[in-house]
Image 1 (tube, rainbow, N blue to C red):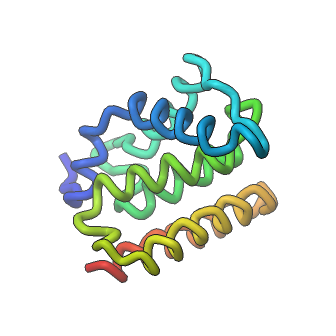
Image 2 (image 1 turned 135 degrees about the vertical axis):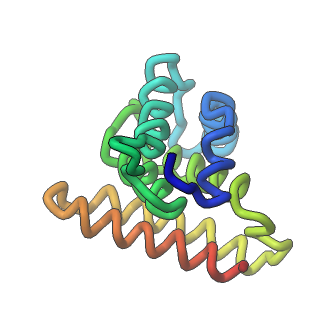
Length: 157
């Protein structure tokens, strides 16, 4: 079995359905007056959960996405581009990724309000960048998202 970084190991142990439902309910509450986000269906939960599981896949003893930042980049890109939801794909992707990073990376926010604000704004901008990208550029876009993830992880370590 390949050696996994600690963050990837933690990622494997998470209740993905619980995270997806939590993010969805948070978005419903936050955006009910603006652009409402509908209640997520069991099929939509399964689709997003499957994206997360695909990021953890191992074939011939080799991880498809060998580092935590690659896994998160794939998840972020796939949720945005997969259009699994009627509305709120970018917001859901940013929320799920933010939750996964906050759970898997020790002290990612470190009670630094500037860092937290910067991270959340940047997550929203990254979701928009992914949505507006050309599908033919997926490899480059995922690499960009991976560097975005590493930037925030490295800033706190």
